[in-house]
Image (tube, rainbow, N blue to C red; front, side):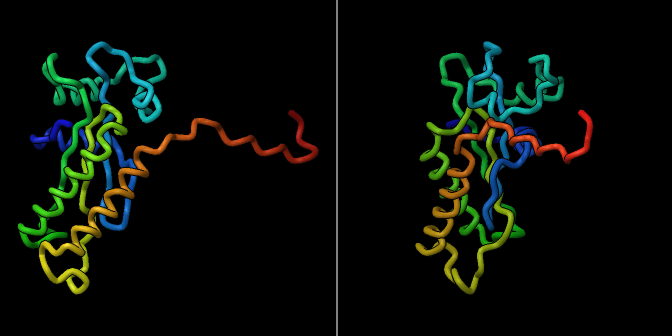
Length: 173
């Protein structure tokens, strides 16, 4: 799994859209097109930014350039962690949460599509419930919530369309 490192990479991944949410985390994903131009099945299910002709819009080409991988490396998923000071004041807590994000991401690596993912902390953990900055209880709570976040993100998407509602009587077709 590759890690997001630059600000433009994070911005591009966050612009891709939110895939799943939990009370404390949000997962953003930007689908990536492999260099050979073929769209993998998982990518096709999650990508909605094509214009119908099968071509990729200009903005996505610019974003694709941020995630180039040397030919000898596999083109796996990318993962970044965003833990703002606003929601985790202490550096030790931010680092603990980031470590948990990367461990959880590695657990789900084989199930994630080739895409850039950003896990964003979106609310604070209650300091009354977790007084220690790196308590085992906090780590377990973060791990459990990240497991839910990634499980929701990798579940198969339903492609069947909802049945059409019947027309009211007396309406001509």
